[in-house]
Length: 518
Image (cartoon, rainbow, N blue to C red; front, side):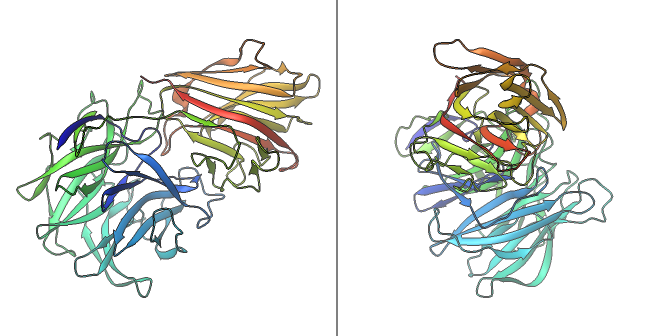
């Protein structure tokens, strides 16, 4: 065996709430997708070191249109039993206090790439559902339970357990309250593992911010009572100098050689802002005195860790992306609350180019026609070449940095009544928009737009053809405005029309993203 040193996080950019399993010699890891579709990104690896994008599981099974900010698909959990994958996920429809409308569903497939079954509705009592397959063949659903009667802002009231009857496709029997949580509160993300006669309940507590912590309980009976390990398994709450912060939401996997590892989420703040969102890290855990401990002996996240491998392996991070639209859209693309399909984004209408038919405004929660990829590097360049012939000021198309409908930057082509076709710049910070007064007249059919991000600063550029130098659009932008919330920043292209919704279209020649992190 070889000991391979790797750097965390293993999945960079927006990859929160990781859940990891092993099927034979292949590891699978799924993450939350929130309002981006296709949903539930799944990665695979044969060594826990290098990961590839295997598929996105949720396609037409969900309707996210109109879902509020930071809602939609939370904390998926993947499991495998008797030749079948089981995916549990939450579709959150509202988080307005005091209630939380969170609906839990189950889908199954014999292959990670599908086809997946139609969703089976389970319950709505709380989020972060998890399915445990017991050795006696019974299946149990766990989830956080939300109690609107609590006077605290976060009303997570612990973890509940109920049997799931697969033949009937429904939950049966009593609901067991198996964990009330600790004083850290905000108890969520339950997973159960059976090891040497104990059922181990792993939860996330303290919220998904700086207080995030992994706690562990154990019981001889799955329904409890559970004994709390008073020592946290993982936290950065008391480690302000750690390069990995907000660490928590852990899940376990055992290798064929009997090693155990925990995947968990983390952030890498830059000047206090987690621009890349919540990412996925991994560390070895060991069993000691019938409790779980980090292999390092402490309880802190590690920016570097050791993975035991069968052969020498070099860790690689491939963040570059290039789509020349010569065929089907590459699978890296996501869209907001709607599937990226030929009804509005097609490479077939004019082969070799991507046509995006306009949708509602860039702030829409329904038909916002943006295609985007995750920002995976603190520093990067992205550019696209676009042809667009707007007829009114309400028609626009261009390049965007997009955290959510309240925080974005948009460099776009539009129309002005006095100057004709122009380039403009619009930004929004926490819902407060600012439209730059600058208007740049353009005459060419095709315009190239570019954004260059160097850590905390982003700059937008344009040029009409390769004979002309790049010209900056607007002022340098503060990238920290694209940090926060539950997601991470995306880099994308889009077309919008507030006159006739789908009254215009644009064509894109290519899209290139190049990571510049060392």
